[in-house]
Image (cartoon, rainbow, N blue to C red; front, side, top):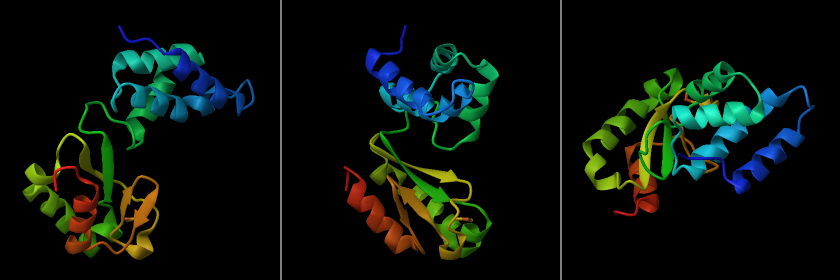
Length: 157
Ligand code: FES
């Protein structure tokens, strides 16, 4: 059974120390990411419970965070996620075309290393459609630009 590693505990403790002692909830976001990364990019019920126990916050609080934000995964889709905003501005400016392109070419680009995920508004609506990867925003992305992004970062080019 997976347990929190000492390294994860050190990293989680760092986040706990950043907030007042009565605000341990504030460490949930970072703690889940730490545990997810240690579990090859996916959370599970067991891992969420471990985070809840370690932070001494209610399980429902941790589940709420884990199921609300798009950066958490519950199955191993790949190592790195390219997020495509599919909210209104991006949708009417072409993000549906990006998702269709990915759907049609998934076999080429999905190599258990990189995967594409539709997400809610990435808060850059003025430059729709928006793609986010790593810590970088790609703005006004059309299918050609999207194809270049996929080629650049995919292992199976
Ligand atoms: S709708 Fe896509 S960034 Fe806001």
